[in-house]
Length: 431
Ligand code: DC
Image 1 (tube, protein in one colour):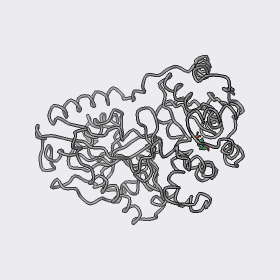
Image 2: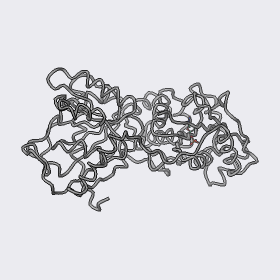
Image 3: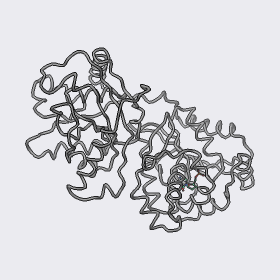
Image 4: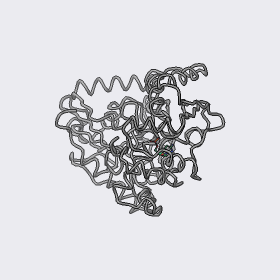
């Protein structure tokens, strides 16, 4: 699926954010504020008492930090090393004064631009910033560059009660070497000095409509009819037989490919994770399971990739890595096989290998009650009991963790994942 990207660039206080948010609302697209990512990392630099002028120290922090860029509703949110970066953090005066220095570092831009591009795998986006039309989405035909005189922009900031030396920031942002603030040659320039927010928004919407951009209903994930039917039947079964409850599925709403890593107690686990989500995901299954003719036909249609346990599993692992690199999500079981007694088993190295090779985030998932419902030693499931599926915050590994070579590095990643699964509990308020 090819999603639309609308790029809105311009200097500080040109009205980009407000216009971009309204345009996104009008079309039902995602709204992504790329400046927030530079601000979030700048806050993190200050929070860690790293000297912003010491680029080696800043880059070292960059590489050992874990960035989680997710969606909350239709807007992006960011967490760094498990800390929520709030709006208040990002608007601190110290951040205003430092962000341009940090955003001038090409390595910082490389890391954050890749994250920005990932959002387009989740749906149509309106993204605002400085280099969206030139660097992040240079191929999009929908580019705007908002301008306004420096006096007008300063007045706007003062009216917001924000102390922000925007002239100095603009100078730094447009004179830096790496992806400077500038209008793409094919961007439409709009001078907003004498226009209200509503007028600018209306103008942008009108141009986009003329160019054929249509409002989209909230992107419904595409399931084939076989997947949909199996999904609906399984979900109804889990709800009826086990009063299945799902907790924090919103944490799975991250752009791009990822692995769901769940504890494994039962054959029910793959469909439990699959039906806890609204989007179709991918699975791995023993190749012997594909033998019966019905399954030969069905499993590939349920996005299941066969794994050969006896021979080196290279081809299936390669397929799995290819899928997540294409932006798909796949469920894996770090313990390797179903628990014999209901307790969590030590992590195998496999997940670490997949993560180290692909660099994608891992979303931990803890399933409660599937062992009681259908343990290893039973032929058929029990038809009562209670099942909970709990999603954890995505784990984005730092570049350092991913670069750790060899088996020990992969084992360390697997163990971190297993620990995150072990830490999950059913929320007390039942949310
Ligand atoms: O849009 P903003 O004022 O919140 O952005 C804060 C800073 O982040 C801005 O001064 C420069 C930097 N930035 C950037 O370099 N590239 C972007 N695409 C967005 C922001």
